[in-house]
Image (cartoon, rainbow, N blue to C red; front, side, top):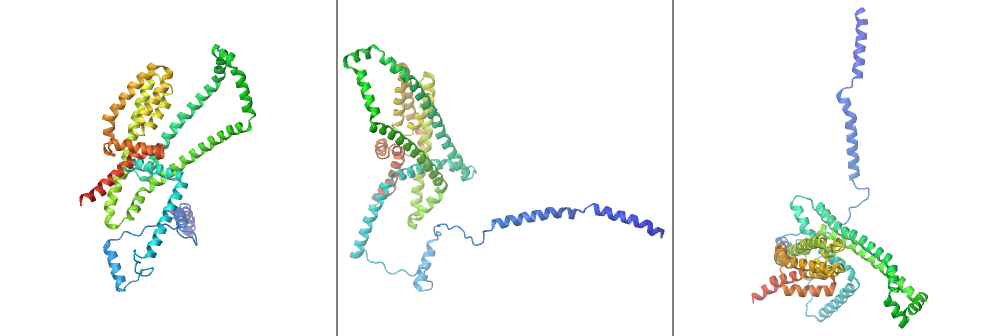
Length: 436
């Protein structure tokens, strides 16, 4: 009895101690249950909703080898397998009067439809061309990043961010400068007018012709004329609408550039599928050469324009030309126009530097035009050696024609377009003529 009474407390103590110290298996059970619950929730979230269907996507049919099509045609001819939509019947003869009249009418109708659409969507077509030009210009940068193991989406974001930063920097410099100068002009205008009215020249002219009274009468007529005041209001509204359309167009071009840049490989692939199979390798090679030359031209022209503007800014800062930073942005924009852009930029800066004296304008003109010669013979050939090669006369004519048709955008894309046309003429027409 004594032994049992002594052992029972001890056993009770051991049992309670074992109960208070949980085993490792029991401590892991709540964590495992939580992980299992989270995994189940994630799997349920990944599953589609009941009744939901995947979004339809337009996909090109797979590019199957020619042997597959031959076997399919032989099987259909033998009657082993019927096509999905039935066997096509015999084609109508192209010499049939009904066929010729119908197809001629359809051709004329399609031509008129295309003309009507083009004439009513000119602005949209210009936006599309500008966006495609920007996308082709940024494609070499994105391709270079892809070769450095950077994902294509990240390369696109970096390229577009740099482009947006450059445009934002231009406007951030342009708008405060314009506001400051307009404010100074408005503040100084009463003083200028008062000094002019008190000058001896105006007094002598006023005594002879009565200009002061005539100006007062004309101002009263202008203020009391509703048509004149309406014209002023209409001009303000027109300027506001033009500014809003410009901002909207810039947004559209930016969005289209993103889409084109992201979808450029698939766009090329789909475009090549439209060509006959036997000619796809040649079409792909020519298209890749054209897009590569356009991209290299845009990148090269951007480098040349940045060097041009940097040199102009340094010279303007040294000689004391006013608004040096703003004029440097103007030089960048004008330098993108080949051949004549640098000349126009130099003339603009010289005219503004004349406000500081003819010595300042002369020094800047000598330095800048000397740099243009150095750029034409040493900088531009080395930067543009992987871009397009267009004869000088063709380049001048294409720039003038592009500027006359589409303005600044036409002048920018004139040389790449001329290079593409020359490449097609060389590889297709001349090669065909040499065989005869």
